[in-house]
Amino acid sequence: MPSFFETIVHQIDAGLMYFFRLAENPMLGYLVGIAVLAALCAVLGDLTIALAFRLNGRFFNRDNRELVQMQNKSLLALQARDKESYQACNTVANESFGKVFFSQMALGASSLWPVPFALQWLNGRFADVAFLLPIPLGTRTSVGYASTFIPMYILMRILFGKIRTRLPGYRRLTVSNAAEDTETESMLRFDDVFPEKGGQRT
Image (tube, rainbow, N blue to C red; front, side, top):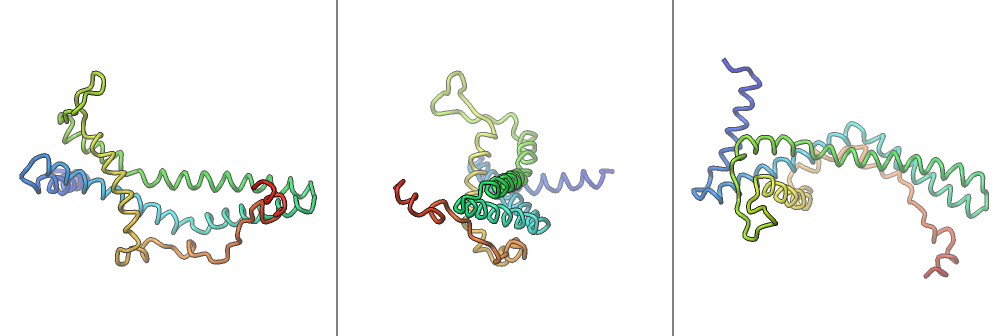
């Protein structure tokens, strides 16, 4: 008797293969299936980012506010020629930038987690399928499933990014209260603090 996990895997496999068999033409059916699989990966990745914002949005906003505040204070200290305050604020601003940068990197990586699973499934189903190249690339005359899935995934990420806010209920599902923080300070530019020097550079 198959375990619960095996049953779920078989159900997912059957559900995915349904789309690959929609069209009578094998190539068209393959492209339809690849498009659906790539779209599912894009949606799951986007939902993962939304969940991360719901759970950690306050911390992300706090780090962003700290970065802006310390950056502004360092520029104002530079304007006042307060070297010690400038160095202290600039150090904190650099630390905040590091936290914000790596948080954004982690969020970006978290959206990619469905891709390895999709590639593993494709390997089990289409490992022996090869697509002939119209123009050989050196000694390579054909490519495998990854060469069709990855470009399709990138395309689906771009398309989904353009339409996701127009989907009924999706914005309410993915936007957290922490992400709607209106008490944000605008980051000052160098030209805002030293307009005369900014004019000289232009």
